[in-house]
Image (cartoon, rainbow, N blue to C red; front, side, top):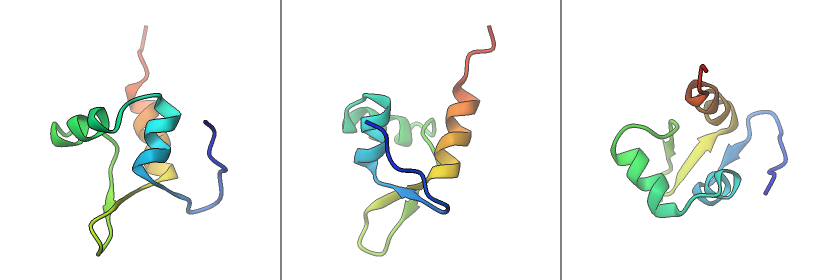
Length: 65
């Protein structure tokens, strides 16, 4: 699934999981271990991920081989 990119875009957990092809439980496991992308917690408790933080996190995950 490709999410439309717009300046300052914020992704939901479902958006990120869809792009990566992972389960929500995997995302939350990574988050608990400090291995997931930076998140913003909204006042209602939901999470959002800045598109730029997500892209930077993906770059950091690239294999150097």
